[in-house]
Image: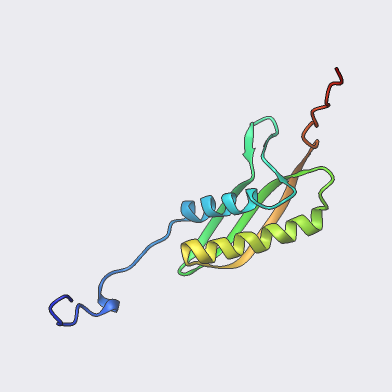
Length: 120
């Protein structure tokens, strides 16, 4: 403390609980930042991609991420980069170790249309 007396024992201060929803949001953000992953709406239900679900057990988590790929991104390579990015982000921002990150490619999107220059 400011007057030189020691504060309470750090272990006695309390605890931090990270919810599944927090890990899901971190996973979605991390997946969306990977090159080759497209932000899209998929299927009849109109779900936004990427999307994630997470199940936390203590300080460990299992995460599932659904992504859309921007054509012609290679599926296996992009999925591995998503796995790595999600695992790193969840550990860094939520303090949770991911035992498993499953990535499903549920859609492939057309590349963004390139605006053609008009000749005058």
